[in-house]
Length: 229
Ligand SMILES: [Zn+2]
Ligand SMILES: [Zn+2]
Image 1: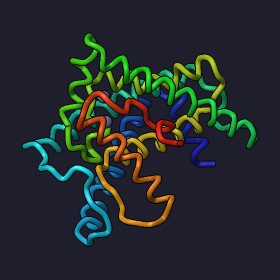
Image 2: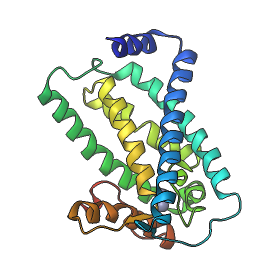
Image 3: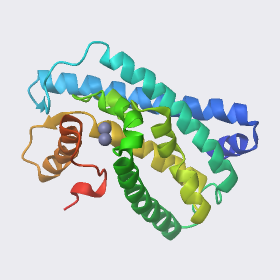
């Protein structure tokens, strides 16, 4: 399969080639998702299908600054991906049950890890780094990865850290990383869709919950599982 050959090439290539390939993937996912979401939200708010959770004006140069930090964060994620070449377990899970077990273990690990890392980033020593992310008070999809490189490395090295202890396949790590990026960008959309659907109302809770974190600064530290109830 072409994708398997691409993985094999990436695993065996010089680290600089692998770094460029990973950077291209990370930057593409970030830019395409944030751009698509921004455009969609603009259309839907204009058509009154939804509204901004926080409709204050953006700061001067906010998007430009968010994109700059976002691109740097994507390159840091690519550096983290190089470490997965040393610790991965096969390219794909060997069975459906393997797929579910690896996915469940990683999601539980990442939710716990990111919650405590986020709490740590709000402590005195680290707050000067996390401050970059909180420069965005009214968030935009681009705010998702507007973080200091140190914070980006906490995110980017989470998968290789996990893979040190739990055998996880490389392809699944990439798929989960891409979904994680899309979810984080959605979390920063500051968009609420008008609908009576329970599913949409539940989905609306995610950006509302995280927008509050940016508005008040000291509430709602969690991500995926924080509002599952
Ligand atoms: Zn925070
Ligand atoms: Zn945020």
